[in-house]
Length: 64
Image 1 (cartoon, rainbow, N blue to C red):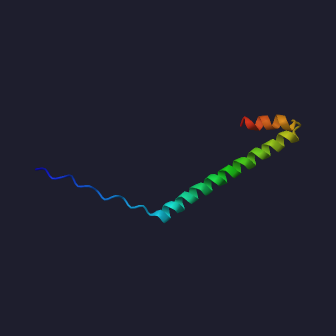
Image 2: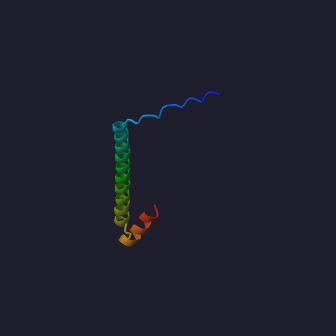
Image 3: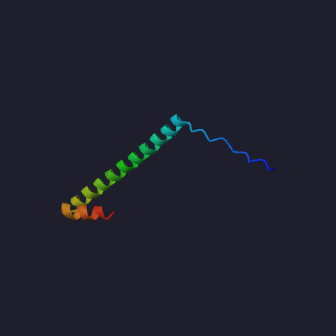
């Protein structure tokens, strides 16, 4: 009779480290979103300063 194949142990998750890594990921995502929003606002204001109507500037920014 053949021996049953050995099963490996279930990997243990280090939950505090996993949560810490997830928090760092979400902080990075939030920072990137903030930078993108700031850049879009700056471009909008630049378009308005160049003489575009706010509605036109908004449409241009929405296409970015």
